[in-house]
Image 1 (cartoon, rainbow, N blue to C red):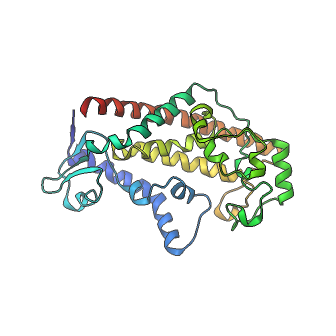
Image 2 (cartoon, helix red, strand yellow):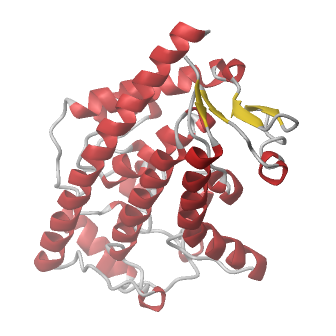
Length: 297
């Protein structure tokens, strides 16, 4: 059943969302205009591929109809095929006919999130994935070659070899150097269904992808919450890397020391706790969405 939202109901939510995401999208757009890069924050747009404009565009969710939409706001939705827009009457809603093209992706997300919840969280990787991406690499092939490393290549190799590699997330593993990949169990894209586990930093980050793949059929408040979590996880990710990122205001977590490893695990556990709450909310939202669609198509 459709739920109509009056201007007084939807407009404050739209304004709150736009104000929140502006803190993330404005710096990105300014950097791009100036031709500058940020090795931490740009990842959330380059890797996840949701544009600042798409992140900024607020939507209330499936079967919720925005009423009394002013022409200047209505115009923001007319360029997207995912919406039914009637600017003459001021009505905007997600187009149910566009849901089917996303259904397979969302079913897979539900499977990934459900399966991961059955596994215990593990915290024994010590954030070695960024180290594995530079392990015994030629300088020109290092992912963030424009950033200085805190340690020499020999020191990085020594830390990786002493700590070991136990990555469970394919999308991190696929960026390992060949030398690093050979030091742990190989992963494939299909392993996401069987190896994802809730202690993994990237598992929590990927909640953002699971939500944005639903487009306007899930509320933007959940999307923003997942983006904020991904940003926090990314910052921990890179603070624990072998790069010197002090100029970006990021103090290093020195995984080459026992104290650094203990600190990383402490922060990893806290992020895992937060992602567990988001995972439950995301899974519930996706399951409810699929159930709604099955009864309205």
